Image (cartoon, rainbow over the protein chains, first blue to last red):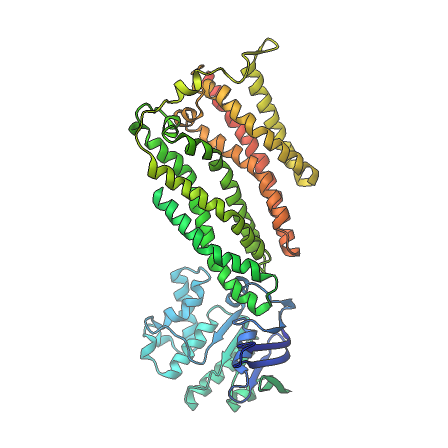
Length: 225
Length: 318
């Protein structure tokens, strides 16, 4: 489903501050796979996730999605691909504090021109599934960090994407919430979603079908469970 | 009009430098640089889109505004009189009001092809064409600015004394038959033949050039037919030949003017898309499909235009 070919990302190219964040990474992620990318801080995990999620463009190398080379697609087409096929869970949640929980969750549907009542119905449905039904009319700032993370996951899932990309989804939550989040990912895996997660968390790493370890942007180890 | 002209000229000027930078760097840029240029392109593209939309909207607005000035100009009875307040500027730029939208719309057609492609293959061509058009675009806006800032209510001669009293450009009779009738039948016959030629151009590229040549011949013929036949006959004023009076007194005639303008413009749009709209396989496919649609619509709009002329004449004579 997703394939990368010698993916390289260099920041500040040609300058003295040049950083090779990802260096020649080739991966193959099948449909329904759960890939966990681990590695020390600054090893290029988030950059790799952004590259696969078409949030940034590689300096070199290619990304294939369903055998189509999408890394050279125009920004507007990449946006369309992201909107239709991907759901993102960011480490910092990136929720809008002025909006209600269900409004935050329904935002990706707005980009798909779904009507208001339908948006609300779908968002509430996802929130119920994640045990946040009672929080739907709260403002996100009124929620605990763990709940905010679950709202972020709900937002990623509201469009029923084929691929879920998560950046350290359990990093900023307590052990109990981390277990809840792991449970959510387990369900996603069972439902056949392709999941790519970046994590230090050994519990999450052990959930993956495949684990890859990055060191200084280079693929150091790859293990299939 | 003044505000729109200022807005269009300012916006056009604002993005020329950006367009030039994208045009210059695109070819040699690597993927990352292209990504940055692409982001600049979207902004430039949006501005250019607005500028062209303004300029195209300004065309009917120009004629309408001029028409509203008729009561304020002593001696003017229609647009002809208003144009005579600044004859050099107004008459010399009249043809541009019909020709420039063809170019502007052509750019928008290319942009449409580019939008449909996954890799923005026409960025360089779009920016290059915009750079080439920008002086014309500025001049177009400046001409409007000059006209509307300098118009004064001077005494003018209007259409009746300016056009009707002169000797007609066609003889009264040709081989004993009314030359008006000969001209009308010739024009309608040629226009009717133009429609199947458009459909033929769908299949064989050689016909595209025949249609282009025909459109060049039909344009002056249309102008003469309008002044010498259609205006006096549709208005039931045998000695009156002013096309502006036709458009004002029989406003439905604007529709056949518009449909025929469209069918005359299509051959030039297809030339533009053939030359600049085929950068890779995907754009080639899209361009071919779009060109087919354009030719089909051109054929249809010619038939509609001719039919509307016939209906106008029938209604006028019954």
